[in-house]
Amino acid sequence: MSKVNLLNYSLDDLIEYFASIDEQKFRARQVFRWMHLYGVADFELMTDIAKSLRAKLHELAEIRVPSLVAENKASDGVIKWVLQVDDNNKIETVFIPENDRGTLCVSSQVGCALECQFCSTGRQGFNRNLSAGEIVGQLWWANKRLGHNPKDGKIITNVVMMGMGEPLANYTNVISAMKIMLDDNAYNLSKKKLTLSTSGMVPWIERLKNDCPVALAISLHASNNAVRDKIIPLNKKYPIEQLIQACKDYLVSSPKDYVTFEYVMLKDVNDSLEHAHELTQLVKNVECKFNLIPFNPFPNSGFESSSRNQIMRFQKVLHTAGYVTTIRKTRGEDIDAACGQLVGKVKDKTKRQEKWSKYILKPIS
Ligand code: SAH
Ligand code: SF4
Picture (tube, helix red, strand yellow):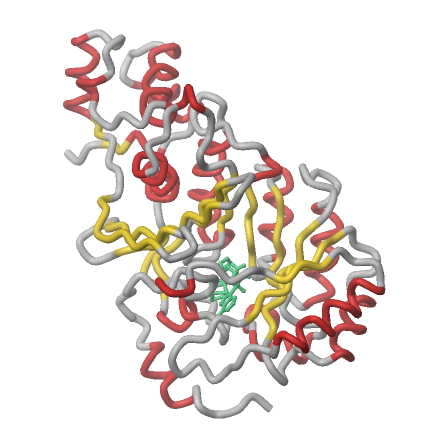
């Protein structure tokens, strides 16, 4: 019989599991704190747990954390970890230190099925969803490597679900993982500092609002359906007007009073000043901020980033219309840790790379 991985369980799930093995609620809480607050993955080191219970847990369960296969540190302090989740699959997690915060960029899937054209993860194809334990295991690992001690406060203050994969396409596991991240017996993140980024899975944005409202970032990347359809195939299913409406509805229960719209700047695709004006109209009834992302190139992408000047002109239109608009600093570039560059050597089961190689050099009309 295979052992259950306790890292998959939120505190409520763990309490339920403990009840199923005739153990008390407070014991579940103790084990939960050992795992997540103190980073302990060995039952033997849980010194205030009775020996008999430790032996029982050892027999029935395990705390399986991903294993570290590589660590790269960029010249700007960004660290990328490559973690092995099973014999065939690796994922990537990125730590971004700043003066006043430490942000961890977490993956939710091995690869991604959504095929956004400008994204190297999307080009790699999809292998599988990560379990809740594999998602939260990235935070567990990062704390371990960074020498986190609960007495000294947090090193990782913010988590963004912006690594490999579309978090809302792995809904149940992502919700369980985020609940663990927010739990004050575990990582105690603030809801405002846990951000889920989605390419626009409208029905799941609505569910998220009720199940686990956290800060929301939307990969908008276009000001109309014609452009968005071309670069984000999912837009054909959930067009831009539905997405904007879902954002408005989300704000009713959001821990933040605005949505962040991410906008990757693609030369001659979505970066004209007309696009910027159109964007201001599109979002005019939504409390929001913009984050303009210079496109991070990868081989055979078929795209170029807009020039710095064009990005600043675009920003000015949004500013003038009253929108707070930042330009994302590209971090970790020298170790391929920047946005959209995470690939984790995914095995391309869908043969998507082969398919793409026929198309990628065609310009987008
Ligand atoms: N699947 C989710 C989260 C992961 S992608 C989403 O799409 O929102 C994280 C962010 O990186 C998204 O805003 C995505 O659009 C952006 N991105 C993807 N490829 C990029 C690239 N090559 N350059 C810059 N940003 C990119
Ligand atoms: Fe998937 Fe996000 Fe990349 Fe689109 S941008 S392919 S949704 S990871």
